[in-house]
Length: 154
Image (cartoon, rainbow, N blue to C red; front, side, top):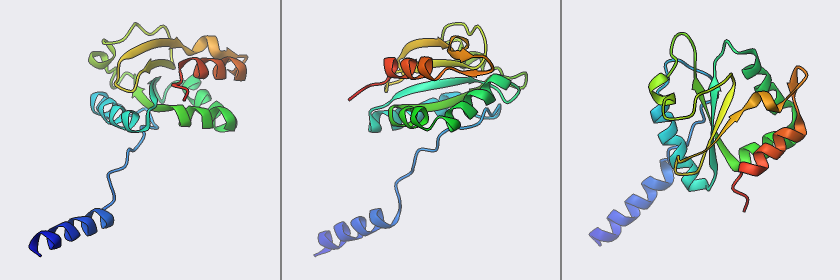
């Protein structure tokens, strides 16, 4: 009887207390710890079978804001991105260049810049987002081709 009570109590507690949810890093924040952010992203990517995109940039970067606006105004691309990738913003600014963390990856020619990682955090690809631009925005076709090339399609 005692074991049954313990099992029932455990089941009740796990039903009441929600599992800790992954909280995406959606802003370039110089106070964040990119190592910890990546660790959390890896755990979530492994559970959801997604790849990871490290979005490197800063709040100072006009093209970083344009890329965010591009995703918000292109529903199909945003949905594809969310379905296949865990996106983690990594701050690069005069307040914090995150040099130790970024030294593990190829040199960045400009911002924003993407690093594609597998679900275990292994580096796969370095993407200059400048080649995805069109005028003062981003090119839909180039962007979806990039995402499809690196998505883990099921």
